[in-house]
Length: 208
Ligand code: SF4
Image (cartoon, rainbow, N blue to C red):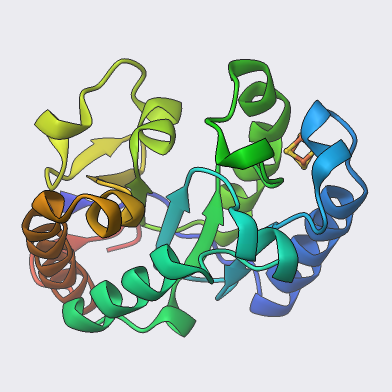
């Protein structure tokens, strides 16, 4: 039997209000240098009580323009992967490790990740997802420092009360087609896992 940990009983409206508060803080944030180049901060979006949270790396060009996560080419690929897995984008929560676009889409730097991660930690606490899907190595390393994404992708593992599901970043599949079969297979496995959790097959919660 899988132990899912404590269930958050916070009302959806309360979660929404707390998430809005974090969004406002992010839009005003100047904690790291990335605020100087942003058009819009990208706090994240989705169901306030989502079962699954996807965490990517950082906003790109189109995300910065629109203030929404995964709306460019990688976002369209993510949408198609979600569809294939049987998940609906409106049912999940999607965010990034850093909320402002790094210049020229460079990798986020360690001090930027450190400055921004308290926002992510609070979003996780409020949404309280049972499953966290890390997209790419930066999200993976936030929870599992030093893990090799090519070794652990597609292998769910528990950390505390949550099930973590590491995956390649959709941009990796988009720009290097050799990664597409692995991404598609991992999303298929994720879909199966979520169906299993939602039908409570082999799953128990603290109050059962
Ligand atoms: Fe603040 Fe995060 Fe944006 Fe840096 S990336 S300015 S810490 S919201």
